[in-house]
Image 1 (cartoon, rainbow, N blue to C red):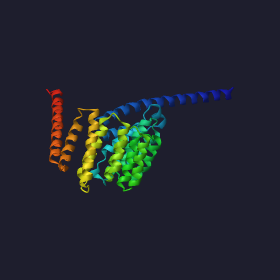
Image 2 (image 1 turned 30 degrees about the horizontal axis):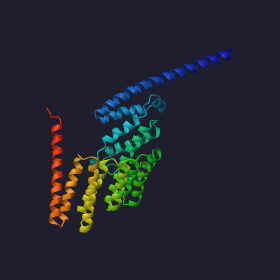
Image 3 (image 1 turned 90 degrees about the vertical axis):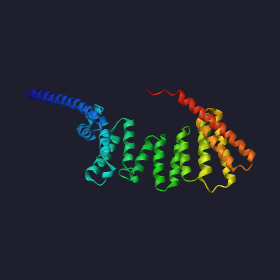
Image 4 (image 1 turned 45 degrees about the vertical axis):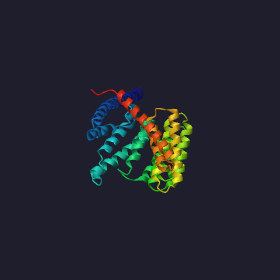
Length: 324
């Protein structure tokens, strides 16, 4: 009987301790939620130093409590508070550099422990930025993080773009092109993958590839006048910035630009930007035209487009609400 009584007392003690622990955990969680709310208020008012101190109180708790009360994002906001305290102009100052060290630590922590995929992604994005040229300036750390982000979401073109930019800045243009092409492969119906690829080729001086990328975009968006307008602007820019062009090639590019502007205007006759560029293209064509009669005809057509564009602009201004 004494043995059974002892076991009963022991069981009661264990239960009491468990209840007390549960109650303590519940209390700590509720207090942490309040602290987290206070920290968020300080964060929103840009008092990052005070906010960081509050967030530190939250993340000091047991991880089970953070998970149970959905407080794991405190890691991200703690990291971002330190990130905001960092100043590039003070690089080399131990306290200032310490802010970025802590920011990296807690971005990694949130990316590892946060159950919300959106928060994980956000932490990884800020972690990549933390290793950027205006902060820690360590691209070797950026690449593996971006590769991880690509594995998590292979359909997000932004990660390929960022990785491609790192390769491009390091002079590895082949790897950069590879990433831009992967982005296009993953999101073939997204216009930004074509315009970003075109901009890369333009920076490399590869005009034919630039136009090919833009033409691919136009094929995917047959009813989008802006797709053709962008092509016309590239033709016009190339005709004037490339001084190595022969007069025949310059004429060819200007004519191609006019044709693209016509495609845009066929889809949207009151497209102000296309009217403006076609006006410029016609005047450019007049400069390389040898026949005076043909030259005057081009200028007259350009004047008509200019007047139409100005009229559209006046109508837009008249329709705009006046400020009181």
